[in-house]
Image 1 (cartoon, one colour):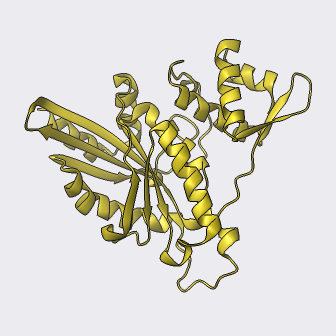
Image 2: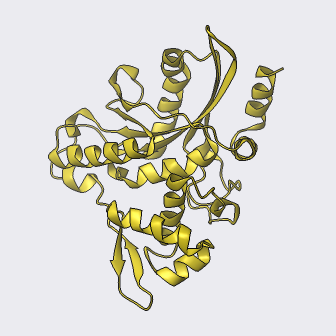
Image 3: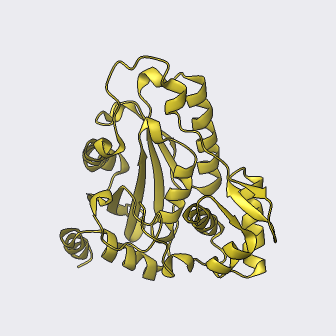
Length: 274
């Protein structure tokens, strides 16, 4: 997820505070983790009324800290990964990488999870493997996407959902995952963070503390949270938070589908509404 930030990625609505926070964090990370207020505000193209409240929210939330320099500066607060806290204990199984999670999670989403969610039609795609395809900027490419159609017995019409998933293996878990999910929600109806926490690490005090912080941040932003012991076993998936449903701008939604989904997926979606 190292796409450069594009102009279109910086054009989030002023009212979408969550997306703006994600964009500011992404820009600071792009500048090496520390940048002056003047430079940051200029490169984002934000006026004072937009920049300072968003910056202050991130400082108050513990994601940025103030630095020195003319005009002041901000820097990212280091987010320690969980691997450091569990390295001392012998691992009974080889470490699972993030890329190794894609297929088993895809399979469970396509079967047990979709059935549990009562989708009438659905399509699951691993979008993390889209190569160098232009997806619109930093953090705009989720790991997996579920396109789904739902109907309700007492409500007329069909309801379309585009649900994104940001996956993290144990050695990559930190609160930044929530901001990555927020960036996806600019053009998705729901966004989830999915974390792999093996059984032998679940009781580690540091792991528990980081998961609690992630859950608090996800709840504040309406991001869903799933913690799983075994990727391929739905019985071990703990849905700690259901994602809040949002209605993105149809133009952003259409752009997301065009950029992120395969031609086969787009053709299938078109059939749902014929």
